[in-house]
Length: 516
Image (cartoon, rainbow, N blue to C red; front, side, top):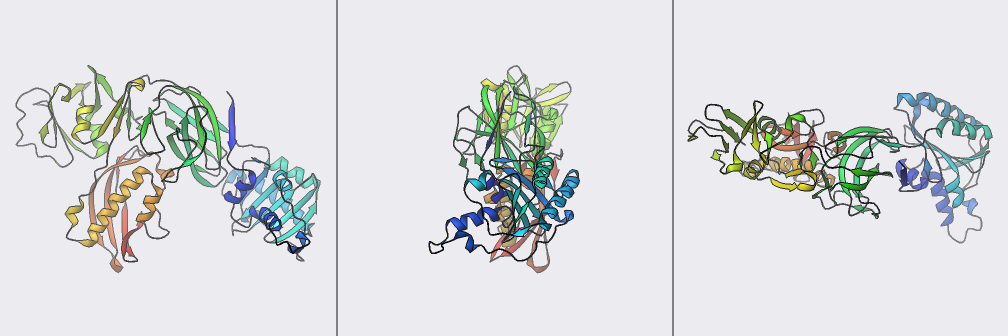
């Protein structure tokens, strides 16, 4: 199986974006400045005076990151925060200090192809400063420290850099080339470059091309691509598994079925993208997805009985924060979004029946079933009763349930302007988190405010509803809310959570200041 690796930018772009200004961009910026200098300057190098001071040595403990590259290749970076990189960083620091000790002031600048094909080593320090080294041949090194440029000759140092830093190229490993819908897929890689970020898995038909940015700020490899999973990465590495879904999120935010066949897996880290040709097989059992996320929890697994898809009542109720009760004497299942009062309900017979929010569902396919001692609810009837949109796709034996979370009734807070504003922000927070809409989320928070858990950390978790909320006035006019959320697909298996959320006024408007 052949892996194709597509680098989205040249190394110059990588270093300019992935490393703060003053580190990687120094030599490129200098070259660009020289190329665009006024015509009155007869000698371009005269615009870059040589430094008269010796560069100071650096300490290994002060190194935040080391990145080596050449042309459009970038090797696995080292990070000061990663214990396994400490020894190599110490050796790299020793080589750099040897070069600095023998460095001489220089006015030489590389540009054009010389910059692109030169071997580069970028050292980012914890204080934001850095050192950028360029070797255009096997012995000569240009060293950029801030705005100063130095040169040194040390063939041994260049070879030592290769021996230390260029031994582990970025790579991506996919556990299978024939993923089955509903099967677990394991992906591990080391091509993310940055310290933290998100890796996204797309699937699309072979031959698709052209990148597109959605309103949420997510880059799609083409208009036909479907997003099937997103996970965090740390220190350029990622290692995760996910259930191959029957549906993927399209560029317009809708979910579309993944018809069994041949596709390309695109593993997108934000600056590089690796691809793998895969053949998607239909599921071995009926597949269920909520808002595009495949159900992998055995407790929520659907069954098919007499042609009707059924879902386990209690597991479904826990996920959505519903109240449930099984009346064994009357064989009646009661499901409600609020605490039900079933004392006055007359089931009328001993036949199986399903009651949603106090009303009995009618029809042959609206009856619950008892399988191996567990109560199951009919999927379609239950979905319609709760206002879910159900899509059945025969080609993948898949059912897609699109649901809207149960939000706060804003009208209940109409008499209190502060609580009304908080209720609207809470509802907006739930929708933005579920939609992974960073732009919408940012508008809810004070300037420079962020949610407690970034999208990459919460995995595929969805908030199915706000079960309850209580408010407390805080000093300075702030408002604290304890909101209990119901969770589906929480990576830690939590069914609910109650974060504390602080609201404050900013420029006369209420905003979210903090989520614990």
